[in-house]
Amino acid sequence: MGRYEWESGTIELPPGVAPGLRRVLDDVVDEARRLVVDEYRSVRENLGMMPQGKRTAALQSIYAIPYGDREAARRAVARMSAEGFVRRHGGRLLSDIEITGELQASGPCDSQWSERGFTLTLVDDRTLEWVVDKDSWARRRADGTALAAAAIEFLGAVQWTPGTGGVITGNDECNSDNNGPCPDYVTRRFGPVGENA
Image (tube, rainbow, N blue to C red; front, top):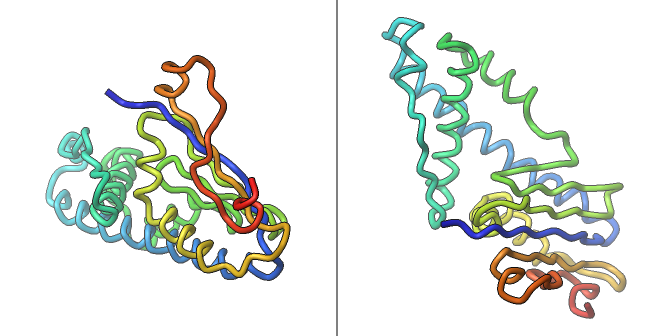
């Protein structure tokens, strides 16, 4: 049984920090795209000898995505995405150029990054919005993403200035159910604003 939970907040960045954060998060997304291309090549190799009409039936329909192993989880998500392309194209196998083009078209813009229900949005190069969608074990799943790991590592090294930072708050159904309607609780703190909240 899952536990519905969620998390959100905003972080005010010091001047000049946004370009470095953008580079780090873009690298995470680029790596995720490379993994999808690698997995797509594997799928294409496995299905290439089958008639087009039988390819989608040969794909997995249930995916086990491990929580505790970030790299294995990323690989499983990439495999799921790769197989999704085969399904969407009715079993037709795409070339490397076509799959790369589809990934570019469906990827995030340069101010929003997402992975497994976790989204970071950079607003005006000063405010970072942090959102974990409400879902079963959503915060646990988000914590296991490469995106969260990269963001937390980067933000941990920031030279914060007065008036910068922020608080991420969350809640879950167990907290609300056991205690009635409960206020959100702090899950993460960054910089002076976070320390003083």
